[in-house]
Structure formats: C-alpha cells, structure tokens
Amino acid sequence: MFAHMLRFRLVPLVLGVLLSFPSFAWPVDWIHDVEVGKEKFLKLPRLDWVEVDDPKVVSIEWMADSNELLISGLKAGRATVLLGADGKVAAWRVRVGGVPQLDEPGQALAKKACPDFKATPLEDVRLTVTVNDEPCRKALLSLFQADAFEARALDLTLEGKVMQAQLRSVQEGLLAVTKGRVKARYVGAGLILEGPVTLAEHRKVLWEVLKRTLGRFALDDQMVLPEPVVVDSGVP
Image (cartoon, rainbow, N blue to C red; front, side, top):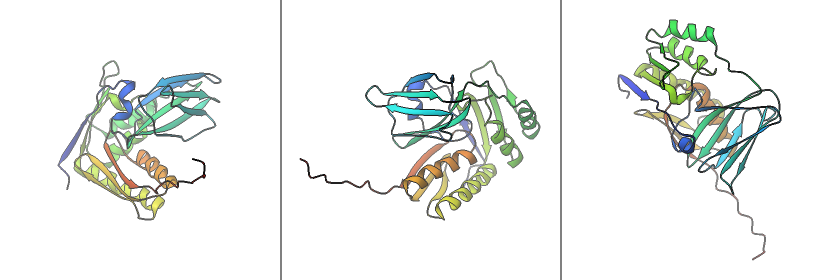
C-alpha cells in the first residue's frame, strides 16, 4: 500500500500562488503579523471561503471586488486561519501584537527523537529531517505548531509505517466528526477524503486533518457537500 519511504520537498512559494498549491498540515504555510487595532491587506488570486479558529483575536474579511484579504487585529493573541480556493486548502497563523514562539525545548525534544534532524535557519530550506517512527512524528507535530518553521521551508522524508500511523490518526478524527461517513486513504503522497458531509462537518474535518498530519501533502478533497438551496423570490 505504501512505498517504503515517501519524500516531500517543500519549496518557496510566493503569496500570489499560495492557495493554488495543495497543502494542508502542520506547520502552517505562512505566518502574518498585525498589531492590535491595525489592519493588513493581502492580495490573493481567489478565495472561496475562510475560517478562523479564534475570531476574538483576528477578523478576516474577503473583498472580492479587489481580490484582497483584510486582516484586522482585535486583541493580542494568536489565531490559525484556514483558507479554501478551487478545492485546495491552506493554513496560516496570524499573530496579533505578539512575538515569535520558537519553542526551544520542543526543538531539543525533536532533535532527540529524530536522529538526522538538521536545522539551517539562514537557508531557504530551514529543516531537513527523516521521520522514522511515531515518537519522531509526534515531536515534530508539536514543534511545528510553534513559529520556528513554515511549510515552504521544510524537506521531510516520511517512512511508510509513519504514514500508516498518521492515516489511523486521521481516521480517528473523521470517525468522531462524521460517524464513519467520511473515509481517508493515501494514494502515493496524496491524502484523499471521500464521503457526504454537511458544511459544518466539512470544516471540522479539515481542522482534524490539520491537527493530525505532518508536512505538506496533496489533499484531494472529494467530500460531497449538500446542494445549495435556491429560493425563487418571484422577482424577474
């Protein structure tokens, strides 16, 4: 089912094409900073939907006329943002009035759990590592939720048994959200999600995948959403 080892090369992406890349896992694709009470505009080619895990920290508004995303800092803190376009999903972190959290103890733990952990902070690829087992994967999963690395700056190699363990974790999350209606499977390095969901369940499934997966993967979202209800107002 799995190759012995699967390799994911994460290369730099410009902001304008970020959403066109099929990615969805820790670490986030991009980290943005905004001050409390301030706003930041980001140009994107397209956006179908956006969701914030902590709307008390940051407000996100899509301005379709100008293809801009308005990020407003509401109070000091951190929030994770999911963005969807053309069936692809990206994850961002927004820091409001904060400083980077580098998690040095977490990095020390990851170095111990992953023997070939090689960090090169001044280079484009800031981390090269082979994920050989679950202790290594879990240590990296924790580390990547801090700010030391963004997805585009990683070079990860995951062994097949690690992918199997990760798939089991994803399936546990899907079972809790959809009671078995959504299934997950890997084809090569691509994670395929299939099954009927409500709109609310769809978003919850994506959050579960983010929480439980490591590195950049080709997410093939084949979940079936309800057809939108069209109301005839009677006005021509």
